Length: 313
Ligand SMILES: Nc1nc2c(ncn2[C@@H]2O[C@H](COP(=O)(O)OP(=O)(O)OP(=O)(O)O)[C@@H](O)[C@H]2O)c(=O)[nH]1
Image (tube, rainbow, N blue to C red):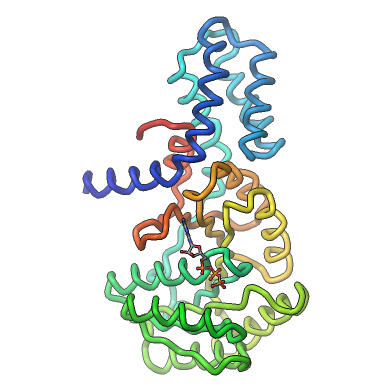
């Protein structure tokens, strides 16, 4: 178990290495002056600026700098003390925004819808979740709701086969709401534990896409009024602060129950998770720190915060 936990933290740290390297460099720079003299307002301002540059957003940056100031004002600090205090201040921001994705403890079939723009990592995330659920012995059905793109259907099919999950699709251009309806009906009739529904990420325009997603939800509710039990919004961390705009649109128009932040390994701007977590009404539930199956992790605010500032564990 300790080994497993270590492996998990190492993957998180490796995944966040670009962001944490950037942060650590900055922290080290700022911290050099912190070690030499008692913390003053000028240093706090520098720290705040650095946090803004790291994409944590102006509001969180101000709050974190303030919390840091409360903990360390008037004291000289070693680099590790700076990191510890920063990690604590970031964790204080994120801990209330941490949520759990646990489809096997909910009603059966537990219906999960994946939304997000093309390329955000929806298909990969869905595939990784399917593989994890299958490994736990669950009966899983995947519905290829992006009926507009043949390539998306094919890609999802590969993931379904790899995971050993059943797969439902329709010819390109079919009604995705009808497919979702069938999937939930089949899920009910055939005793599935979980139904995972992929959706389109791009249509002619944003409003068409939102209308389409709302239609899928309406239709799914005809089979099960409680469904979808989860609507996971998949956001790509490499788009930086654009992720905030996406959260706003999907969150306001479709309704989202949890956020998955992917590709944290592909960017030095992983700090963007902080303003997204704050702006969103729904918690961060999962993070993607690589392309492998084990690289989708439950979001752990404390571990994320420590890893972000380059602490070892
Ligand atoms: N490095 C890294 N790559 C990821 C992660 N998650 C997804 N990807 C990659 O991002 C690319 C896009 O992911 P998809 O799952 O195809 O994205 P999508 O939202 O389904 O997009 P479409 O299939 O175009 O609708 C793929 O090459 C994935 O392997 C991650 O956490 N880290």
